[in-house]
Amino acid sequence: GAAELGPYRHYMQKEIFEQPRAIADTLEGLQGIAPELFDGAPRHGQPGAAAWRVFKEIDSVLILACGTSYYSGCAAKYWLESIAAIPTQVEVASEYRYRTSVPNPRTLVVTISQSGETADTLAALRHAQGLGMRHTLTVCNVATSAMVRECQLAYVTRAGVEIGVASTKAFTTQLAGLFLLTLALAQAKGRLSEESEEQYLKAMRHLPAALQAVLALEPQVISWAEDFAKMENALFLGRGIHYPIALEGALKLKEISYIHAEAYPAGELKHGPLALVTSSMPVVTVAPNDELLEKLKSNMQEVRARGGVLYVLADARTNIESSEGVHVIRMPEHYGLLSPLLHVVPLQLLAYHTACARGTDVDKPRNLAKSVTVE
Ligand code: G6P
Image 1 (spheres, protein in one colour):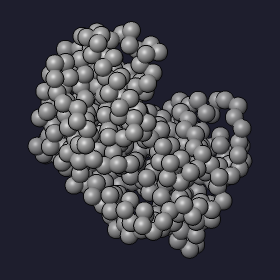
Image 2: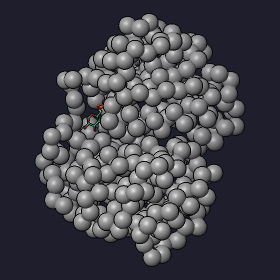
Image 3: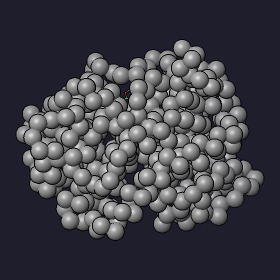
């Protein structure tokens, strides 16, 4: 009811603004990368012992999930390969369960799910188990769910109940859990120095404050949303670990505003989507300050040259400025490897305010369900 919503118009908006709290709760009491973090619901035996054994034994990761949870898995792949040097595959659960794949008993199967009840993700887990893969871990928001019960290990996020059909705070808390999983695996493999562990943990503890600063960009995002509300199509570009963030931005926009949106890794622009660029196809670009920035800048020029209008989420350390046809929102600070957690927030707000401007049912978009417990 209205009382629960407080100052917010919709649950989605409330949940977007709860993210600093959700991350703080999820990381509460975080002292270091201990295997007990992955015990999930209380189990028998010595805390963390099972997790440690599994982390030492596995040689690869297979992530299975649906929807927004699948995109957090896509982002985690970059961390798992770059920080922990563990070969990682990410697969949509409903595809994995129905294809012939090559099982590896030394793979850690990681399911990601807000509800822990998504039928396809549960079926994919059982399929993997049936193929002899017994090392399973879930990153899940519901401690009492089937997913947590059926996996050997669990990292339970503390986003709290999520009501809006379009997932927001569950996504960022999943990313936090997946980052910790990456550090734990790196540590088990002897690939994490104490110094880097301390630096990463420090950056994680600062996340709630960093998220708060990003939420303060809302007025600027509202002015973008006024333009988007008049469009029927939008393109989202990202590179590297921000490509999954572009995918999530496009998903949010289509789910709740019913604007057709697609995401592309920016380097693929010339292989197709450039043909669609006109002044009525806004192009959102996630532009972090990383090694791909110069390349991204040239992708942006390709869009401008075709009359496309750019909406750029620029990292604090980039010198991209607003100009004719280029609207820039600058992020408050540079956040290195954790930057996807911050860049997704303005995209959530963009979808939210665009949907509000179009008058759609934000918390219950047509044809969609919060939790899909049937196939
Ligand atoms: C539905 C929801 C999405 C969610 C997906 C996976 O499609 O509308 O927001 O990302 O299911 O749900 P899960 O609970 O497994 O994360």
